Length: 148
Image (cartoon, rainbow, N blue to C red; front, side, top):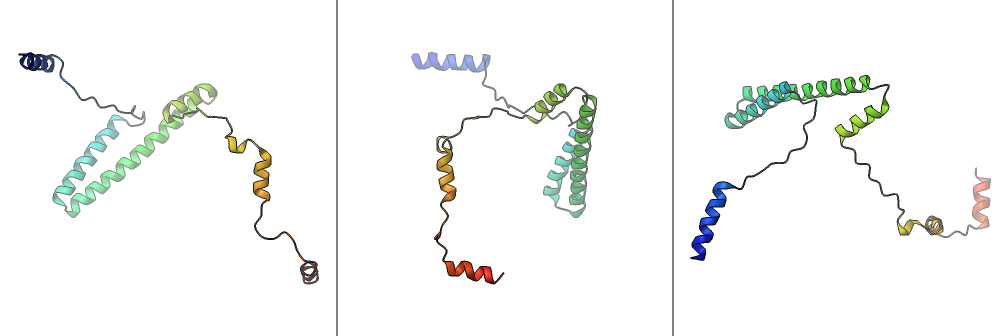
């Protein structure tokens, strides 16, 4: 009886509130325009056709599309940044806020010095411990002075 009730409730929940898979995406780059997305879609379709048929003409077509996509993204990205940098040249606060939002710079720094680096004398003694003997004989000094 309990099993039947549980299965019926599960069925009702599945009908009324089904489990859906949600994909979380990053925010798209603003320089990826609709035309670039179309080029990327054509490139991906050409790659699938190339893998299926594996002919030289399809491979060359895929390579051309791939080159065009890379070039288009490069042009759009540079135009986008040039436009935003030139339009906000006088107002640096807006410029840097915009750049930080686009580039996703995280500026949470921990300015605490680790314990092993807190004492400068310990650091200095570490650098002063040079391997080898520190004693140089007078003969060696005289040899190098006379043979300059």
